[in-house]
Image 1 (cartoon, rainbow, N blue to C red):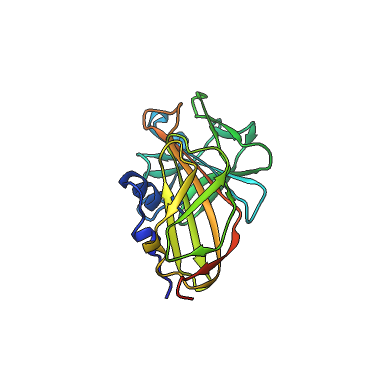
Image 2: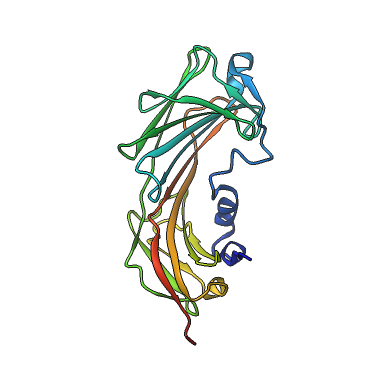
Length: 247
């Protein structure tokens, strides 16, 4: 049976625990408690539209940035909106593509290959424009060594230190699917620690280790209902050996 010691015993402050429990997996706005119903944006008060933008990058599966936008009526869990003319949403000047499904309702996507800076432009049905910008910052593992799971383990990364509203989580997964994690949201951090107690379920042998860097901030230009911007960078997974002192 797969066990996840780390997420149950993460040695970080309460605010980061909330961020991790809500956002890891990029499921915040699309969780089961959010509406998946779809309405036309032209049928609602334009000042009551909630904005949500997200940019994610996974170094293991793609060299593109996956960009998403979603608009809701009635707050961040309200009815999803299908944009009706002349309403549109763009990222870096490119019109985003409409998608929908039964779980998430209506949303907009695009994949971009270049750069780490993104500008969203949302035009509502009254042709009012909202501009929001974000950057996504990389983090790759630095000097990965064998992990002695009976001792605390420090993980450093190549990339900028953490800024305000950012968090970093390091995940170790063994061949049995057991997981240990450690993280930080301390501004200026350049490393994270995984406590030995959080690695007690890891089995000796081959494993993989990776970093997930996230940010979650208020959007600058939004309607009265507000909005958020989420970014996530997942580093390349590295092979590592798990060892025990008694082995």
